[in-house]
Length: 229
Image (cartoon, rainbow, N blue to C red):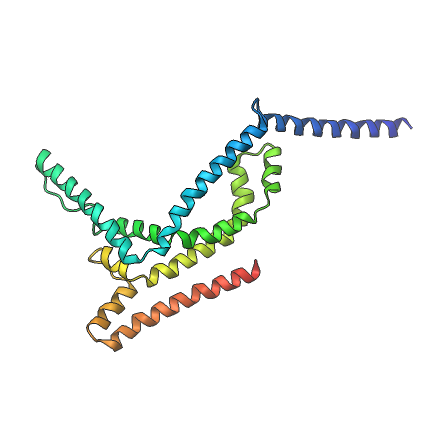
């Protein structure tokens, strides 16, 4: 009987230790502030972020040529200001640092296709079970550990699908690329447009076929990824 009593006592002690550790973690999370106040502040912050979120994804509804012109005008003004500053103050002649570079083209693509990448990630994050995140925090894990070990594996298919969709859209984008691209860089869409403008229909067929093929393969891979998930 004494052995059984000792076993029961050890189990009870183990359970008490676990509950005390959970209580301490809850105390660390809550701190000295009121939990309801923190929740209200967090809710207000989320609402404010949602308003910025809607503004950020408006670029997909705007034509590519409009975005290109809207970026080109202030960037030209900034480039001219930099050139005049170096010429007047340092007596150094430089060319444009922003226009005609890949950086401004990438920036335009981010504005244009942010919604394409954001939508699948948002849909997947809304399905994310918060109990897993809460359990990780109750166990004393940091936010970085929780993100890389729990949230990122769940969001990985959505991130991959967003990258594939952006790749397909960027590859076939013509007006924005044609206006902002560097002079020594040509894409498949630009090359097909140049051949078609010169009425070289046979030559324009090859880059057009490459656009179709390179657009189909990622979509097939995406369909398999969705079916597996």
